[in-house]
Length: 426
Image (cartoon, rainbow, N blue to C red; front, side, top):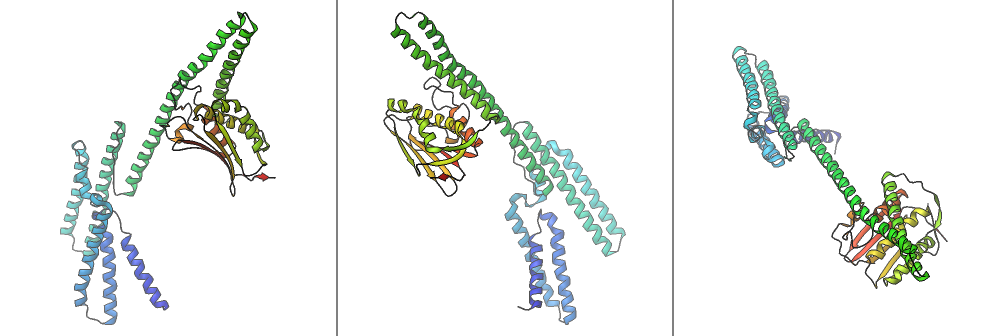
């Protein structure tokens, strides 16, 4: 392809793109489409003038070509915007009697402009001046109609939001469209914020109710058993009472620690003691605290690790606390006489700790909701706990720059802890 052919091809593509980029209401497309077709007509006349061709037959062909372009543009706009392709249709469709003054004012202004143009048309014989005045009146009239339509639609949107309703508003104008978009996003953001605040307040109320009940139970038991220990007549009675007293004191301590941990995790006010730890040893040491509970419920631990020694830099106490919450959750909710699988998996650039067990209950909630504060899947009196364990675990892992996920696959409850970190392996 020669340079001249390439030049003409670029000119043609440029003209086509200009035509396709004409957008907006059909009424406001009249002028740019007319300019586009008119410029092509002038080019055609110029070409015929310098070549000497008779252009009479070509004019009729060009008129058909111009009509085709106009019809194509109208069809393209209607396909894109539907009923909103026409400004006048939008004005009529959005009419409400309460906005009559607005519409009347717009009609008066456009009418005055039309009357002014007709007056100039009668008093002026200069065709160029008439064309310029016609274009000016046309552009001002379109702007007035769009402006008043935008005012009406914005008022409708704001009134709907004020009444707590949502009304979908559309206008084929960038300025008003962006304003409506911002209002919608502001409304959505505010609604989410209010819903979140409401949910938070509801959770706080449930916390006060649930935790006060949970704390009251072991506290009452402690008070009663302290009195029983004082009045015990035999060492065997005293020993039995002290065992129950110790159990309830441990329960109470665990609840208080959970509340403190949840408060710290929510505010991020936790100091980390980062050090190199051996992951298998830390995991199995934590499991040792629950070995008796596993045996009592007939749970068998199946531990699989890609290496006997895995060294990573983490806060050992914080990770131990996470493992405690995970195992505590298993003891409460795992189906008896089943296997609990713990898999330590090494990816290309990540370390995955996967803990799965068969659940004894049906989870009605989404898995992600179980990571919220104070969320429990049982009735408050069924199983001990305040619903903070998984929330604390997730917050702690995120403080360690990891990811804590919960999945539910049929009757399997799965916890995955993922660290994007290099793993020292021996």
